[in-house]
Image 1 (tube, one colour):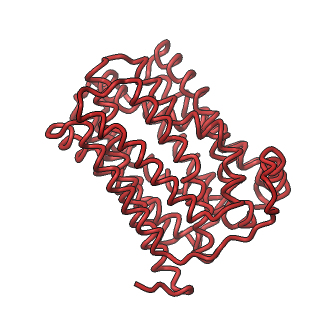
Image 2 (cartoon, helix red, strand yellow):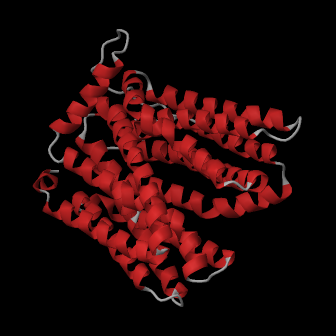
Length: 403
């Protein structure tokens, strides 16, 4: 099928259908791996190590991979990254035919997949403005969040079915197929080459990475926005891991109750993403981020104040907090895509993702320690107070008004 240069809507749809399928299949095998490791080892340390290996490469290598994303063809980098991830999983498929999968090999493959994602995710974010006109980027980020929300919504059920009827190594074929579909979708697209302000000489990785950071600092408000994002990451990312804990311990629910609450949160995110896709071009972007953080803070405070019998109200709050998520992530991506020149976007997205992920371990440590000592419900309340403080900082920062 021939895709014309000006038909950006068709290009965006083909790109993100492929990506959504790949995200869906990746979500399925991630859940399957967690269940497999839990079933085989029953070790919290093993699960923690697996989580660490899943984001450590992105946190450490992020500032430097962006140099290559800006230097070379982003479309080719996405294709190579997907094929690399699929190849790593194929190792587990083959080894699984000859016996039980060694835990150490699964860890190595998780690490390899994370390296591939370190190149793939920023390339996708930096490639999107090559397709979509700037005035429609916020809406399109809403639609991309919609695709992701749908994937996350159905992946637990599919993972449960596959885990019950298939060997773990055969489930990995599911994600390999998703990666191949994503590669075919990207290959089909005729995407303009990005502008480059980098010479063809051997990359000066440190110098070019610093140049990306200098560009970020030169755009009014970007440093303040990054600071707010890092603070928010400390609170926001670990909270999601506590939903099952508060559902089943404080509220006295079952696994079924916990699953319904996870679904409610995903449904809220889906509705928020659809709303962003519908009205994203008309909103005040920085204002949307501030309100999203404020809404999350109010929801966390309300959750922390609920009595043990309040699980039904928590279900509603989880849904409402889910609605706020796309108005943070989707709008944040759109701001970077519209305010930063396209030849620097690879480095910017890699850098911001890296700094955010570096903030996550601190949040996980704080969350684990305080939730254990003071109780998970009280930690929700304190997290809400801290989130409101972050929102107040965002409202008070003069630099954000310049974006």
